[in-house]
Image (tube, rainbow, N blue to C red; front, top):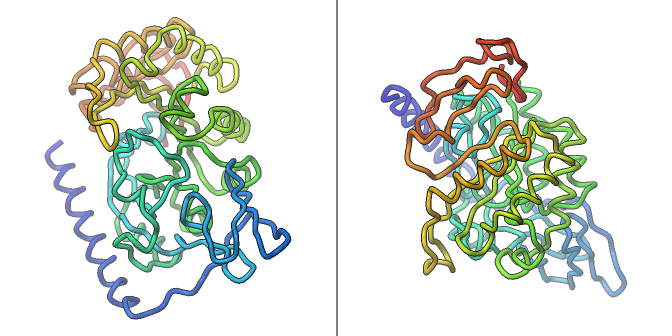
Length: 368
C-alpha cells in the first residue's frame, strides 16, 4: 500500500510538471473560441441550447444557466473547451468505480462549472464558478492525451465538476484516447439530453451516475433539477452496453427513507439490472449544508441491506471507516469475498478472467 501511494504521488508530480510546461507555452496565447455542439438558432439572434434538460434560451452575448456556454455573434460557444482547472491521478475506486479495472489509476480532469445546483456540493469551489474565474490551463485535447500517456494511468476520468459542461472537450479527448489505447470514464450527475449522451457513449467505456434521490421534491429543493431526466440517462447508458455504476449520497432525514430506497432499488433492478453496482455513500457537511450531521454508518449499512434484499448483487457503502464489510465485493453465487478493499486500496483480488476464482461464476464488470 505504501509503495502504491508513493508511486501515485510521483505520478501526480510528473503531471503537474507537464501541465505547468504547457501552461507556460500557451500562457500568452488567446485561446480560440470553440463552437459548441447541440443547439439551434431562434428568432432575434437567440439560441436554444440542446445539451441538457434545461434547454436554455440564450440572448445574444449571454450564457446559459451553467455559465459555460455563450451566445457569441449568432453561434453557441463552449467556454470550457481546452480549459481544464484540475488535473490529478486517483485510484479508480475513488470515483467510485468498483467493477471497472479495480486497482487501476485514473488520470482525472475537470473544467469549471455545473448544470445543477446541489446544496451539498463537495467541489463547489470549482463547480459553482464560471470558466474564466478558475485557475485554468490551456491544454488541447491532443496535449491532454499525451499527458495521460506520460502519467502511465490506465484511463482518463472526467470528474470533480459536471463533465456535461465540458462536453465537446470530453468527446474529443475520449476519441483521441481510444486511438491511443486509453479508456475513458465519466463521473456525472446524469443531467444530459439523450442524443448528446448517445453520441458520447460511443467514445467512453464507463459511466457513473449520481442518483441524488428517488423523489422529485428532493431534486427540486436540494439539487435544483429534475429526477426524470436522470432516470432516462441511467436507462440510456444501460442500453448502450457501456459499463454503468450508481452512487446514492445518503443525507440524513432527506433521502434516507427505507421505503423510498426500496422503491428505487426495485426500479434499478427493472431498468438497469440486478448486476449494476450500487454505492450508498455517507454525507459529510459541505457548501450550503454545513449544519446537517454526518450520515451514521448504520444508516448506509441498513440501506445496503435493503438493496441486497431487493436482488441487487453488488452493493457498497462509501465514506465509511476502512475495513467495513460494504467496501468488499462478494460473489453472488458462492458468497465468498472476491475483492477485499481497505479504503481506496485493493488488498486481495480473486477475480480471474472476469470470474470468481472459487466457483467460476461470471462477475459483472470490466476486469482486464
